Image 1 (cartoon, rainbow, N blue to C red):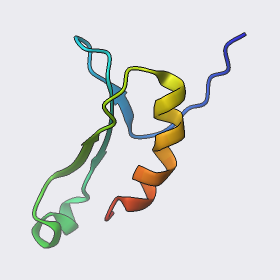
Image 2 (cartoon, rainbow, N blue to C red):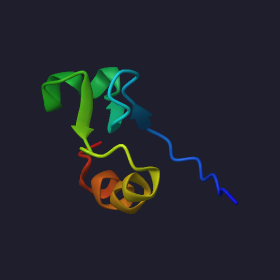
Image 3 (tube, rainbow, N blue to C red):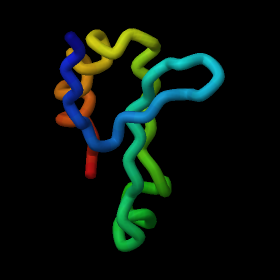
Image 4 (cartoon, one colour):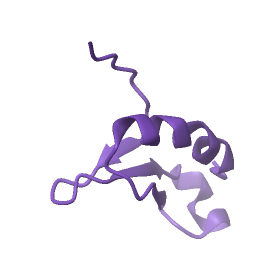
Length: 63
């Protein structure tokens, strides 16, 4: 049985299958933060491992 939990900002690389946290920076904050997106590789292709790491990365996001 598979359980699916939707996590915004979580994407996978099509070639490697590894998960990445990727979030767009709002236009009004781009000058302040200095980038257009916040992106961190989770370095895993395991969905359960990515789900476990997601909350910590999400809290670290400066946006």
